[in-house]
Every structure is written in structure tokens, then in C-alpha cells.
Length: 197
Image 1 (cartoon, rainbow, N blue to C red):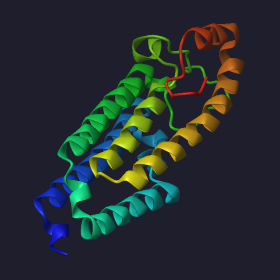
Image 2 (cartoon, one colour; image 1 turned 90 degrees about the horizontal axis):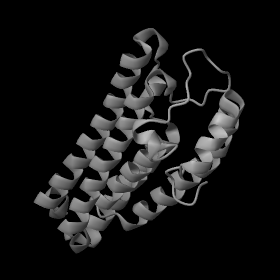
Image 3 (spheres, rainbow, N blue to C red; image 1 turned 90 degrees about the vertical axis):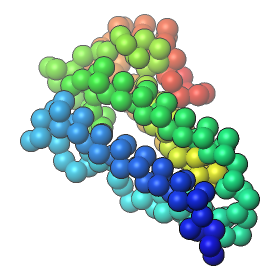
Image 4 (cartoon, helix red, strand yellow; image 1 turned 180 degrees about the horizontal axis):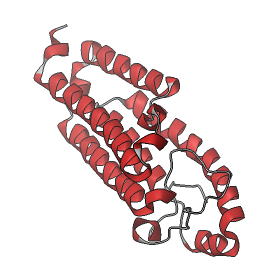
């Protein structure tokens, strides 16, 4: 039971907590900065029941494994690689949000708005959905940092599947809004989520 209070667990769990706090607070602050406080709700914190359950289950995995298999959590190079994934994911996602500006929203727009423009510069030159790419890397990174093998795989599969379904839906509307311009862009730039065109 003392493993829960070991240097390893304190380091990993505090990094996880700080990662979660930074991610969600920065998303909210960016939403307020870009769209104005009157246009932002608490949903911009991106904390849903499913997300909270996933994080709770990953914490349960962590605590179970650190008690039963404490050596599993001692792979510092794995944990540090996860931390790098978190940082890279954050950078990609925040670059996407800042680059898109008012064109970025947490909800898929199904109606065209005047300020809605097709963003193809910055990080969008490299991928069509950098915010999704960043979140995928970030979310899996949180579990790699904790050396949670089950949750790392589960997060990768669930988040990938979510975006694999979301991207075609979102791109349907982007095609409606921007027509040939979007089609040409989509043909020349990858989605940013592996195996999702």
C-alpha cells in the first residue's frame, strides 16, 4: 500500500493532475478569449460524463497496478515519453485553436456563419484536423505517462473511433460551406488522425 505514496506515484499523479488542469482551463480561457465570455458555456471545459468515467477508470487502473505490480510504473522512459506526448499534443491542439480563431468551435457547426472561414494556413497546412490530432496524442499520452497499458490502448481506440466518426460528419458541412475549395484542400492535406481520410 505504501506504493501509492511513493515518489513514482506522486510524480506521475501530480503530472496527470497538472496536465488535466492545464488542458481544460486553457481550453476554456481560449474559448472566452476568442468567442467572448457571453458566447461560452461550461461545456467548453470539455468534461463529459464519458470523459470523466474514462479518467476515473484510468485512475483505478493506475492504483490497482501500482499496488499489485509496482514495477510496471517504474519505467521512467515510458512515463517521460508520455509526458512528451502530452506536451506535443497540447502544442498541436492549441496551435490549431489559435490559428483558426473564431472559426474554431468545440461543437460542429451545421450552419454557415459570416465569421466562419476555411483555415488552410499555419498548422492547418500540415493537417485538416490538428485539434483532433493534438487531442488524440494528448489523451493517449496521459495514459502512457501513467504507464497504464490497458488505458493507453483503450484511449487510443476510443478516441480514434470518435474522431473517425466525427471527421466525415464535420467534413460534410465543410463541403457544404466551402465547396470545391474544401474538396481540393481535403485531397491535398491529410486529416491528421491516422487511417482517417
